[in-house]
Length: 305
Length: 305
Image 1 (tube, helix red, strand yellow):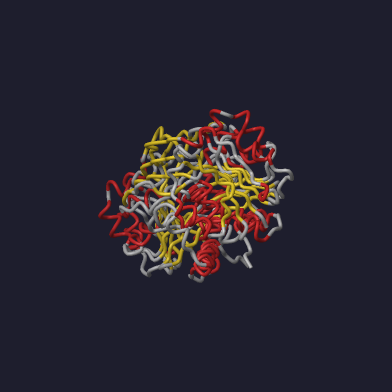
Image 2 (cartoon, each protein chain N blue to C red; image 1 turned 90 degrees about the horizontal axis):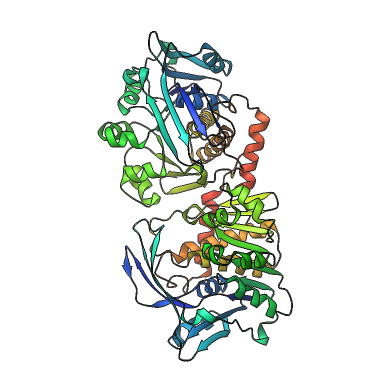
């Protein structure tokens, strides 16, 4: 099945208690497409970079079977750059630098070869930009997943609410769910958000796992307890990419497959944090993924007679 | 199987965004013994109250089959009293009043009829008092569960470390696990704590559920996502009581039964928060408990082929 992932393709400079990096490849679409590539052999990126971007990083995407025809390279411009420093608890971070550069006036272009899209991941971007992608697709994809963040709730809420009406799945974190709904209880928050458009809501809780809401059903999955979180950057995007990549692979949308997709997404995210940036998720084997998923099964299964 | 629960039996005055109570019955041993009574028909309390305590609250315990022979009633003295006010998020609270009263010099007395104890819950009290109970039991119980809190880590760490060597299971929350171990990662914290005495460690994470650690095995259970948390007071004690009560019922200690015990404890705790104080957990039916456990199964089960 064809899966389009739109989002940032960028440079990150990351500092954690374990060390720091120079500018390395990052961006939501990078993480999500790499994660999805382990399940879906037909992943296509829509994004934009500057002429400072490295061909070797595009090559890496291509080596994972990711189509980068929709990745614009802007001559004379610079790629989106984010720099951040994680605190000792690795759960909070300070943003040191955000340079939008090419993202400031990003106009997503969809090559004709992308029009067969059946699965669409709208990564965290301005809601208007996300809507533009939907308008430029001749046929509505079978499943549209939207990621967003508190920033857009602050500065573009009307646009975001319009975009929400057009999607099937929304992924946000617990604080964002509370902000969007005005409800503290996540159950009440989910009930409200499920009237805003999405039929499925995934609330990401970081080290506490994730919740899936659909109609009156709830599924809860833990995050894998890890001895060492080396670098959390991109874990949420990796989760989302693994999630939609798995769904594109099984190609049937129902609550049970959504649950499994969340487990696979969580497994991919648990790899992501083991090394800096994309270092770990560019080198996974099927056996490693299967073993990690088995760890999730062991972690959360019980058998009450 | 005989189960002794030692801990506070007290008065609480509680204020939440939903209302406030006068002095109502509370205390760790009260919550834990009520929860345990749904699984184990031979629960015995060790505790102390003042002459201000109400006979009707003792009657309620007895009506649940709880033996109160070990509950001392001190003439001319007052019961332990705690008053607290929950914030709007229900996850944090201010303590308004703590009057130790009879608890200040609590000397736990074990009636001869308690000497058949096979399961022992050492509720949150001074580690020295917890040790006294162990010394006064002629035979070591089959399973000893210890609950404690950050306060004892601050003021009686040496005693606490001594007591830890004597128990099988420790239940603490995530912040306490970090404080006790000096490790932020809960996996590393658990590894350290499992060298301090307990063979099993349960880390309670409130609305995020609980983790069970044993050797190199980990089990994670979610808390039931609730639309309304009416009053969280006693939820942790109710969890612990349901946990050890279930184990006393099945009477075989292994990792699988521990996992189930955590699910049953979590189910009981999810009832506790639905009303003020003990109001909800004094009136449960077997059918209600079975249905709630089924909700936990639905919440966390998935089926990856």
